[in-house]
Image (tube, rainbow, N blue to C red):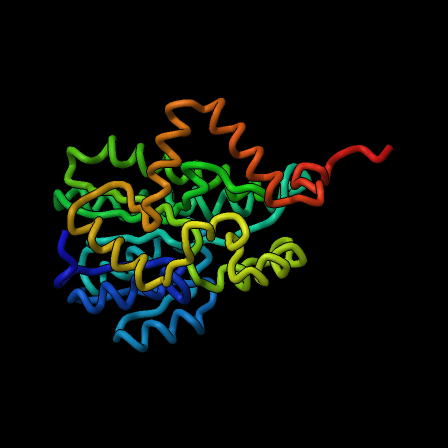
Length: 283
């Protein structure tokens, strides 16, 4: 899909990758870009810079997502590309409270479902439409130190696969973005486990200490690759190409891959304080 004269909606568009995607879509000739964010001020800042529309929405609210789609179609015409990009991070394992896990599940997976439910009927009726869902390399591999992030991003990848299989014959195309470390303010936008997050921020990003070994990319670089994938109708967007190799190794020999990840975890925590130790019984 080419974005010239297209209508684009981007959640999590007030900063980071979402902001870069908004600018990239505008530069590619999109007719209108709707910038959605939990922070309405930041959404407004980005929308103003590109002549778009801002919306302050919690993507966990399905009614709000449905209303967003209705309002956009009424004001600007059918949505051609919906980018479900909102996300945040935590640094916790099994000790993570159920409420925290549920919140992340809703943002990283249910929000993608809500978006698809709202926008697909119009796309299917026209015989074309595009979904770009942001997941993470953690969704293909795992995220040391963050159980909820790992499992919800894996769910996001699985959902994108299902959508691609189930609706391709109706003209729907799907891409899923799975980067490693990107220079964003995702930590500052993440309310959970702030002490752990602050420590991670010292490394430059939540994933800095874990996923930055293959480089920390700029959001604009990631956005450019996303537009290439959309143009080519390519499902998997891997800004860090090394992730493809890691995923192949995991698929070929999962036992060996697990052993390697255990060694990697130990190397990250030479003091012996491993992430899972938080729930160990006190003797």
